[in-house]
Image 1: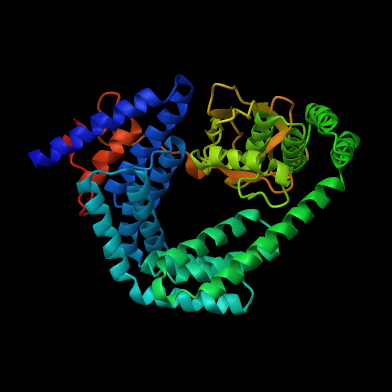
Image 2: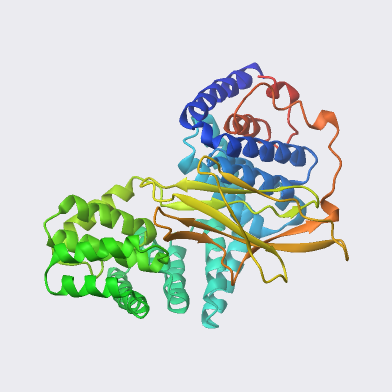
Length: 480
């Protein structure tokens, strides 16, 4: 027992120091919320409510971005599987154990524990993996590619059979023809190359080469359609920039592109085209650093782009921009939905800029309304905050609940749209319900685990040391 406690204590100290030194005061609210979510997860876990424990652990992860918490989510899902036999939870637990091992950089003991749990999951899942694989094949035959992807992914997570990577890639390729999401082609290419590398003698090199060639053709078609879509609703300034570029006048094209960007209110699609053309025009004008910068911005908004359609002259700058992003997390903004909230209380809506190395996002705003209303109310977020507080909602007049709709927009310095979560046509929503009015939990459930000012990441280290066999949290661990 003493040996284990010392191991946990040393890990807590290291991770707590990294957490405290690595985050600015602007992130304080998010980490306070993450710690609260983690604490709630602890309480649910101790009560045997593993579904809600997993939800709160995941909320803590999304707010803190600490991969250590992936273990906590996986543990809760695995324990819930033991109660309800839901293999979807077991498949997800397997994926999270793998991600924890890959991303959290655990010590030898913790890595061994996670690997043992992962092996246990796979041993339990042989028959289920076969069933999922067969179900995926049926979905493919019925052209239900999203369903096929879900089943193939589950079969792979449950079994680890490398050959399934090929099937997942095929399903992604087929689904791309339905929704034209470029990330699907990028994932298909990655999976095919992983299968080629790991598949051994079962790999048919000719088939792989043909498939990669077809994926490249699909990329070219995508780029042509993308540009045609942008040009159909393009500003006169952008059209002039294209004309100058076609004439070989890179400097004039750059001047027009600058005007187009500063015109304000561009959609993300228009902004993608501005950055893409700017990179090529800058290369034409011999401005290599400007070309690289433009392509870095382009790839922030179109991360799956691979240079298809980029001029030969601009290819080196594009390659440099690709290299820039290879060592950085993709540009992203994340949001944790409020779920069900109580009336007469303000609602905190976390909106975290999880990765923006180019500092493109200058403004974030939330538009919200009661479901059924025609008018939206807009609130802007403070630049130094990771959450916005919506006004308290009134008590439901009829029934016990109603929905509030909202969506989130991030814009640059010229009010151009960079990223959205939800839209006015397809908004996000949370529920205002009388059922969410709860009394505070007993004091013994609120104070004991959080001693001092330990960070949320530190707490999670203690958790995976003490719930490895399913036992309840030990109070002495929380007092370290």
